[in-house]
Length: 512
Image (cartoon, rainbow, N blue to C red; front, side):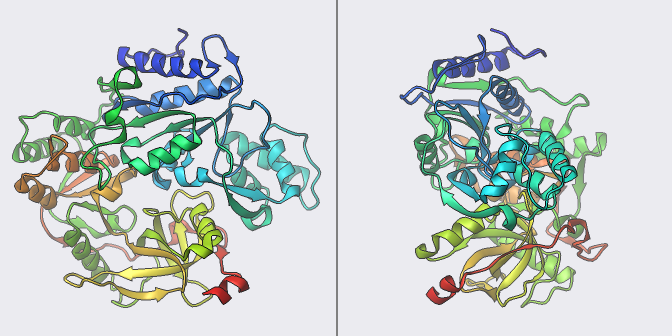
């Protein structure tokens, strides 16, 4: 078959061929350049799996470009053009905002699984602009938008493929052109899902109901979802439905972090030997650091990764104490993790609004300060199209040896947050940061426990996930200690436009 211009390895070419054959069977023929109406039947899902550095993201990107070049419309979470008969569509999904933003950084227009379940409702006038940007209509004349503003929007869209971002470049706010959100009524067509090791059975079944054609991309060495007994959804795939990439495609200058990750696949390597490898790698390459203690300055933007929840809480309290944070309030610059949406079922629209703005469970957030109303917080949501919002919040501050957290801010309904200076390795899956600190004493405790998960020592899965979160530099922390911060917490690096509020309507206020 006709492969992309660069040369795949044998295992990559085999996986690409298998995916191409699946797409041909549903009317998307990449070889012949032919696009047929979608079939009425559901195609078997397939998975392309491999460890870090094996080329999964490269394959996903190449398949995306090939499918889009054939005329398949890419559906994002921020805009979907009007439904046309026999229109073929592709959605590229990830379980978390952070994972989706990593793909977008590689020029792949990804969105979260949750966002694809809900679609924005555009103001009819600005929908004409969106249709024009997407290539489905003439250039509109809109009162208040100059030719120069429209041209800026088009230039932005061509570079980033984001309708909200393009409209914001033209000088509009989200509240100008998005009037609300609705649950998706109709199924879509083709779905590519990255970080599929994070999917649980229910999420997978939800995706199967929406996408007749589904291709998963996942890492079998990561941690399985909690409650799945160490099994990932693609573990049940057989034969041609699963293609594994075994060759490691290192960066041009090689990656000592990937070398360490793949050393964990050797059954002869025990914890002490692995830690010796880390020390040797640190002597050769400054992208691996052996740290005597946790760096408090790094914790402000990339959390320390730990195994035990007790370790997480103690490190968070040490971080807050080092920065002089009071025990009963947050200070601007403190990192948070969204712990879910605490709303009654009758407030479904408010839940959709919060989640559509990026406040899904596991979202990484920085506290900017109190909102204008009691219980509201100004927040920066990493990975969101419009990152700065003001939202009804329930903030929980945890303390060692205390079962219930202290709640300094609590709206009657809204998004719940835990502190994010340290997170468990399970919650870190799907995320990456330029620099990552891994708390070695916790990995050692997992090794001493002797626990196994799906046939592998738990400590190896934990270490693998933790160190592969680092894009540029890995810090392996040796001792249970925290270095004093060299600078105060700040939000200057996050300054953007005024946050958009997420406030309750009078009707919603009356119902609480």
